[in-house]
Length: 400
Image (cartoon, rainbow, N blue to C red; front, side, top):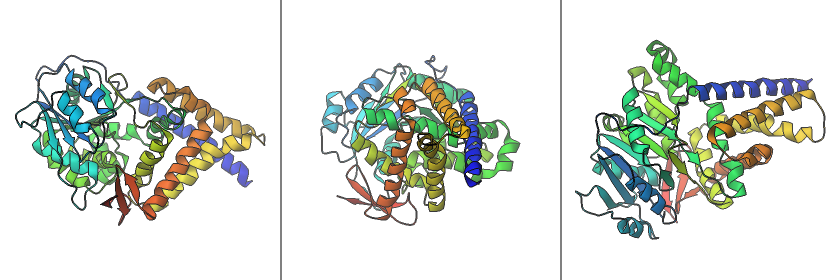
């Protein structure tokens, strides 16, 4: 009896996830190469960099090839101990305050801030653009990226435009885990609700800022803010203690939708690519930094999500190896259908589809490790240790 209820509940939930994923995709516009907007507002591309010597050259070279003329690029060297600053300087980045390609040295991390938020805050303070584009040192941009993003932002009048870049995966571990970003982000979060709320002010008022704020999400690999909006919401200062600052910023914007603010998410896989991590060790450390903090201290919600996803997204595949029930195959079929749709839309590795139970199990283990690390010795990221305090995202940094 209990097994039957669980199986049919799993069928129902997996079907809802698939429907929501497809609905989200239908409302997710593709950002394609576009002509430059009729007016050229100044754009500041802001790049925080801490020990990014392995990837920053490709990123900067792609930014220097942008076809957008009203552009400044500012790199902040956040106390790097490798050749990050030297590579930027070799590409023509100068400490001259009037230069359009600038290199600045980051100040020491103050108490109460996470490293990336502090770096981005410093960048915003010296930026002169009408739009502020925060991007990561492991991204590569097509020449039309900035012009296309600005044209889209102006067309819809958004306060924050964020992209889902193409995720480059090379190693087996990357191919297993990285595609889950699209699967989880696209199936568990009601992106469609934010879209409808922005189209219908009455719906935004009914839903309220609290609910809409919980639905907000963004990718820190590409955040294009209207300058006025960024500073009105107090920018990175408002999320200075949050380890997953991109999602926290999106939530700050989303909760202002009833006031007329706009948060737009686009499929940017044709314009921006990113290789987040290059090994299993980096995946382990990177997602350990993200998976518990994104719940913002809601430990009940965290453990419910872990148990929920194990029971629905992993366990049916395990039981199928030993026991036959039609419902098991129905659940597996629906989930694999979701994975196939994600692979086709975002061009992710088919290995992630074929090894779905293994990749998902690994992600859940990393999530549990994220909770454990935060509650014990602290989460380590970029050679800084963040101690868990009042909530999971609000952490006190300590140097190793």
